[in-house]
Every structure is written in structure tokens, then in C-alpha cells.
Image (cartoon, rainbow, N blue to C red; front, side):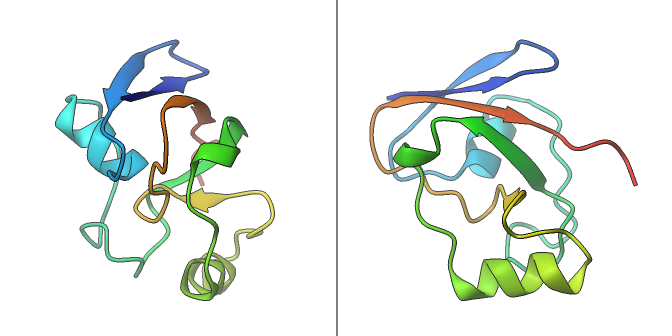
Length: 99
């Protein structure tokens, strides 16, 4: 198991290795926008990974392209639907300020 902590609300949820940040938040009744249903087709699920990025999958070209298309810096943001938890550990995230 891994854990995902929201820096702002200090809520922490457990996450299965192999699941995404988005799936884990939704499975634990954490409100997390996802207009495209987690298909890397929008940017509403974007997060800032504060720490623990080493246990997440690497950002691929599709994720970078989607973030860029919506005006978000791929070096600063991740799409929660694309952040697969690869191993046990703790990830701390923050939701960006509303647009």
C-alpha cells in the first residue's frame, strides 16, 4: 500500500500499488475533478506533486502534450489520471488554485 496526502486539507488516503492518484482519491470519496473520466483528454485532474514523485510513473509524451495544450507547464503539473503508483510509499499532492 501507498498513501496520498493532500497538503492543503491534510487528508490522507490509502492507495493500491498499480492504481492512479485519481482512482485512489475517487475510491476514497475524495472530490477530484475529472471531466474526461481519467483518459488524459483534459486537464481538470491536474495536481502538483510536492513529494514522493519517485514512486509514481514517469510523465509520458501524451500527458505532457495534454498539459501543454491546456496551458499548464508539464514540468510543474501532473495529471492525476496518469500518475500510476509504482511502489509503496507516501505521495504529497496539492491542487492548484482554481482557474
